[in-house]
Length: 181
Image (cartoon, rainbow, N blue to C red; front, top):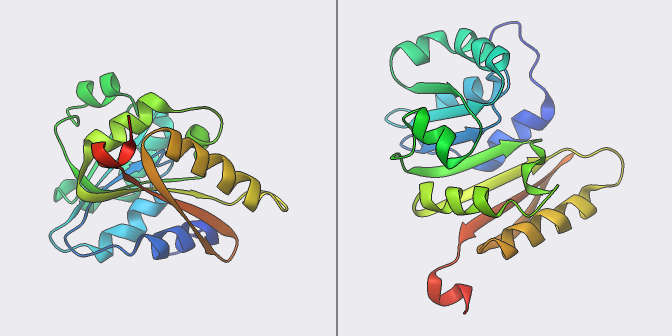
């Protein structure tokens, strides 16, 4: 990533992820692969898979992370974060320690029930879903409240974390007994 300006929100989000060398990560909405490029050096035996609906974005992500794609540390797929999309991309049988999204509106614009159920299914035991946002102006609290509500309604616990200009919501699937009737 020599010579590439990395947005501060992406640096902050990756720092908040606390990536472990053996983590298996999935990024939803990878764009041009900037976060993937920041995560790769933190992994030794771990891997990162990234998805985006835009073929233009995933082409850029593959080019940016060419060596890591070639050596199998990174997998990038052009698909939506849906069960059918991940199945078609050959990703539905994988399990991840951390699933994350940075400035992806999926979790605050609607109930996202299908996507949260899919995330719960894809998470390994003890895994977590992270949604990071850098909203304009003073909307941090508003966004945190919306996403926390979406996570909770979707069967996840929700913890709000703040790092400078971003807000992150960390969700963990509730056990069936915890989720209630």
